[in-house]
Image (cartoon, rainbow, N blue to C red; front, side, top):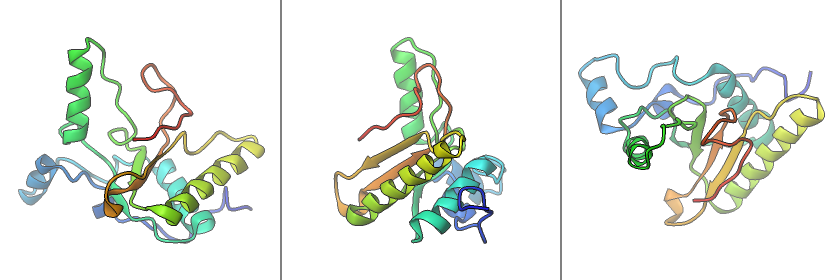
Length: 168
């Protein structure tokens, strides 16, 4: 049919780049424990959209700097602690729900990914479908190699409004 419904010719993302990279999960993996990332933690529909975006819309490599994150991951643990300190319930974001990745791109490549993801979302909206990416958020500060674009697909919820955009 079209590039919004066509099956990608391959999976462009490896399990290794999508797995949680925190010290806890790395240690568990080395010990052979089934902790941290496993194939079932990234949502298949999200990966399908990510692969379509890569293959038909962006058409260039999309290196993942952060995929799935367990709640022991330092960034997620900080969010849990912050919510508790504020007396609020923790609402998991895209990464621990298996619905988010950070794509390590900067400058013109980051701009082109933002444009491609926006066009992909727009094409879905014009076809009467929901947005595949409910969060498209650039981080273009800091050193060139630390910059990224976050793509997320979580649903709207208390403490997590969607669709949205933010900057870091």
